Image (cartoon, rainbow, N blue to C red; front, side, top):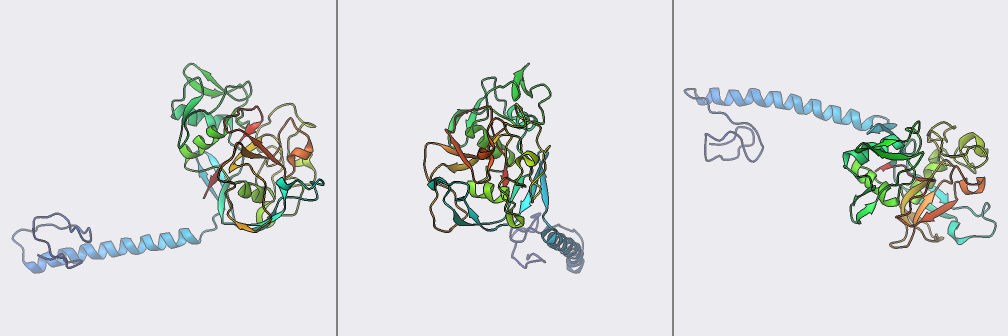
Length: 317
């Protein structure tokens, strides 16, 4: 007996499928071999039509403008890759090597339009059954403190995590680097590299060369010590050239990289140093001066630090 589709020999005519092509086999008793063959010819026609439609749908999907995706209620914007100058010498008059300008080339990626909020982080904590101590397993790092309850952050009550009163749409704070990574792992994404973060903050291939993300006037695009007293709801200031919010001020944002000085050589898709003591954070925050909110400005903390001005956003590759 041979499979009428791929002609593979089949030793047992009572088998229900062909192991080679996966096509269905059926036993039609008291029928001629021609009837048996016609049965599979009709099935094959149907299969070919379905496959043709599937191929066309795949083609149309791949040709669509990949503007955005939504995952767990988070909107991600498509960031077309390119080459840019990372770092800043003019805003760093002392010539700090930690902001040495250098050319960086990046591949395409998706970045969350806004920072992760208290409400969104609570979904994760409750889904993972994190107890009131805020500790949980982090892939590759064991059990770590993910987050600490805070008056305008997340709080533990009656056996579950919930946003502080009227703070659901504020960026999550008191979250460690471990807690940011654990969330991204759970949601199917990752933390941005420092280079991805800066490229997006600059406006990607639509950059207008602003000092802050989206403007030379920080008050129009960011929350900092001159215009607020604590965290503010995400997305309430103007976005930057790519439609991304709060990349200057509100909260510092964890990146995946270990902190270290830049080199001057051109690099492609840099991942930062292999090791270190501190993880990079970017953006400046609600309680800091404008100079900390420059696009090129860099921060760093130990990965288990949980401060009231640290948050994060997420990338999809």
